[in-house]
Image 1 (spheres, rainbow, N blue to C red):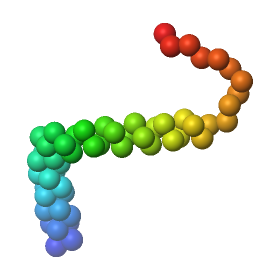
Image 2: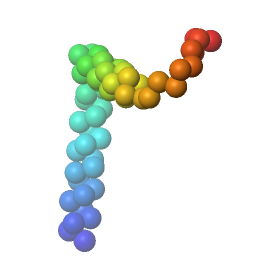
Image 3: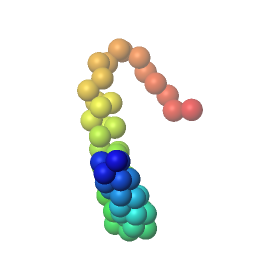
Image 4: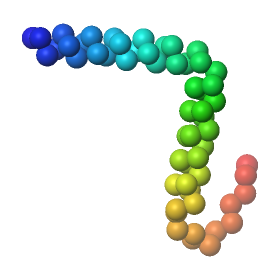
Length: 56
């Protein structure tokens, strides 16, 4: 029972921290930049199948 209460308290703390961070413009800008970087790295690692792709 104590473990469940500790987990719930931790989750509430985590949610409060995320609410605070989402209002931090620098944090959001960094998060977007990091997501773009990871996606770019993953796309660059894909094998080239020789197909040309156009934006639609």
